[in-house]
Image (tube, rainbow, N blue to C red; front, side, top):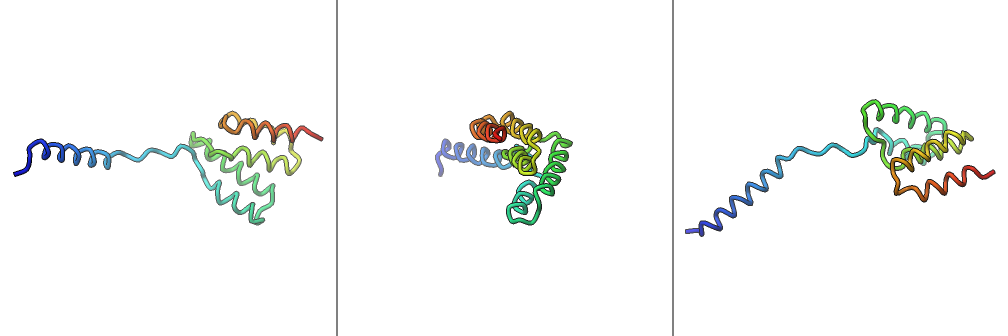
Length: 119
């Protein structure tokens, strides 16, 4: 016959495992909303900078409408695209937004902001 203490411990372990399986999934931290495929298309040369800006702005509106947060790099990518078409003011706004949302990117965003202000 099994030891009653071991049997109780086995039942407790089984209960903990089953409880862990019943935990509902956590919602994603960021709303990607097609960001990765859009950037990939751009990097493959399938879209122009302006088409990429339009696609990312549309995604940003959809993400904001859902009350979600865009993923890391989203605003930085948008800022660099704006800089590539000569819209320096919008580029700086996007880089500042990236810096504010993701403070760990501050050093790189400061570098890009400084670079965008140079003639």
